[in-house]
Image 1 (cartoon, rainbow, N blue to C red):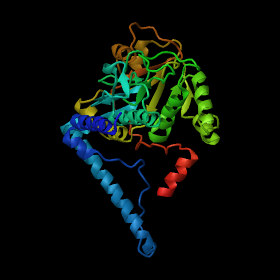
Image 2 (image 1 turned 180 degrees about the horizontal axis):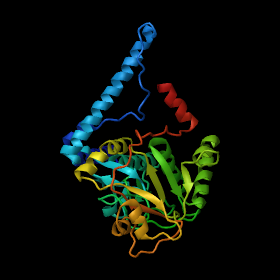
Image 3 (image 1 turned 120 degrees about the horizontal axis):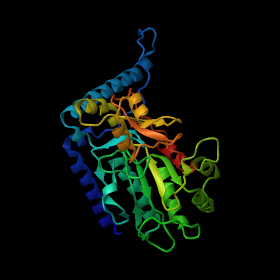
Image 4 (image 1 turned 90 degrees about the vertical axis):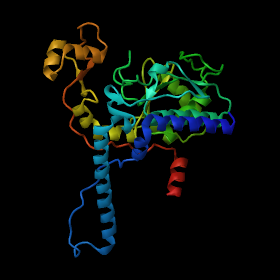
Length: 364
């Protein structure tokens, strides 16, 4: 795509974001710190050298600014919840997506089901960034199929256990024969390993990725492609889970025709955490849910009584048509009270290959 056309596409996407959020959302578009920080201890001038006063004042100012922003977000939640922008609340398999954004049309991708392609702006930007990275490396790449993300109301999406908070995206593969019409199982010899590895690499290095789920047989193809491209073996062992650490790229059954990307959302998750109790209290958001592992002998009625909810609410949250439960299976249980605040959302540092880490350090 010519540079000017790509620029117009990006400008259109940004306009869509701002129109979805409104002016108030633009004013709230700030990155929150990722941890609460330590309390500032009171000390006398004699106890603290002069060189220590400036950092202490800076930390106090940061805490004060954070408190002011929290107050501002909660006031906005009371007055105009839509002005908060997209909010990702809870966990991918027991959560909510509020004020979602539709995934836009684009020259490098196509939507399999637009009605199920709603997300946060952060998730959309991450997916677009990764696809554009492939196009930059391999100009003229076939369009990629984007599948389910979330429905416009958030919560349970069809047959999926996750995809409830706008942070999960199903993304198709690149094939040697060219553009695919929809998701289809990929055999090792059919996969365009170079382009698909470029996509996965961009997800890992250029986005706040949490997990990438894919079938084990295709993980092997991508690993071999990365080795052929002389990627650092230690880094590959890390992200593919060949060390003691859990890898970003993980095997998941029924993922031979697409990969499942799950992202951290710094803004949507943190703002959602702050304002959710206010939204529940005002009725602007439904009450939360928990995950319950069913034990032998339990019934919908007994579980509903335990959590103070109804059989119908449990059925709706899990897509159940009848009352039969499976022992050992986890179910989403709507509850009536807002959860206890677990503290600020923490997004871990990106797990970068050595050359990117060195470049990042040299620019600090």
